[in-house]
Image (cartoon, rainbow, N blue to C red; front, side, top):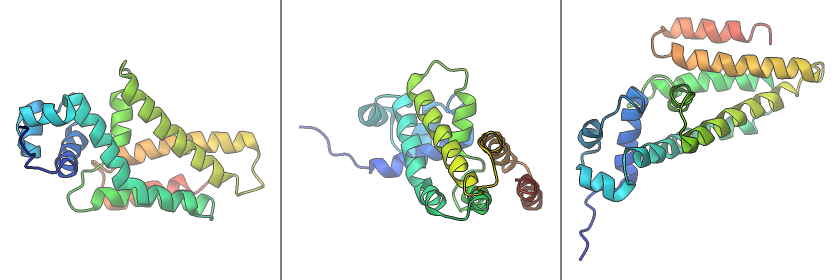
Length: 187
């Protein structure tokens, strides 16, 4: 007879997500996952297969955690102001109790940029493409902009968003605010 799990997968994955968020994939060991998740390696392997399986589930967990922010962004109708608010909302997630600074998906995107891991790269590419697509939709709300300008601004904003989440790890709230305000000064 199989033993009954004495943990909830959603709870242990959220704990694992925080370890990966804080340390990245490569710098997270199975020992660290065991300690943070509060379960042993056998249970980790039994439920998730391996560290990579835990990581993929952690990425899904992060997407669920940030889903409300993305839905708010997608459904907003004020163009560039919506993008600016999305930047502020992205920073605010880092400030919530228990969360790490930076963005797990952006950190992963950077860490796996030279990896052959097609599963993770697929998810990261889809995430970045989606963000850029929403930026383009919001920029198109300003009918005075041509397609070339919109694409250049969308590319700029994707890079600015990468810079923003990196900055949240080390810069002060005032510096972050100044960064966001200056980013949108000429958009």
